[in-house]
Length: 110
Ligand code: 5GP
Ligand code: ZN
Image 1: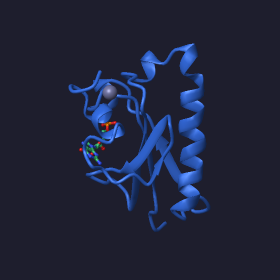
Image 2: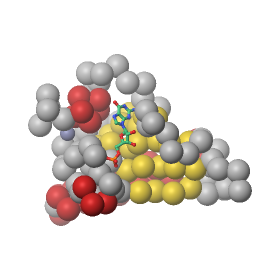
Image 3: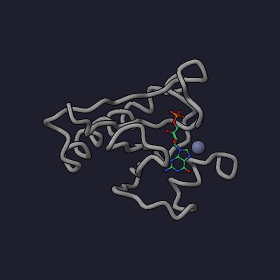
């Protein structure tokens, strides 16, 4: 992908996005239009269109996203209060950016 994909651009550092966490394989940054007091996006650097396109080779990528989400929830202080992890899949599932990403939402006062 590359120039046509916003999350390829962001994850490769071409958009000057502030990363809360970065590894060789993924980045974490705040959603521009947060739907919760804490709303992070976890984005693999590899371009994968959606959950439908995950292959056996991507098992590590998916595990990495979930492990990192757990760690980021702790860092953001919402591990104990609880949080929501979501993959929107294709248009009917609310996906608007067609590069795999995991939403981490939490921090509500309940
Ligand atoms: P989707 O609906 O595809 O699962 O979620 C895409 C998310 O990306 C949305 O929550 C939207 O607010 C967020 N988003 C779209 N463009 C940008 C951007 O340029 N920067 C950041 N930080 N988030 C973005
Ligand atoms: Zn991409």
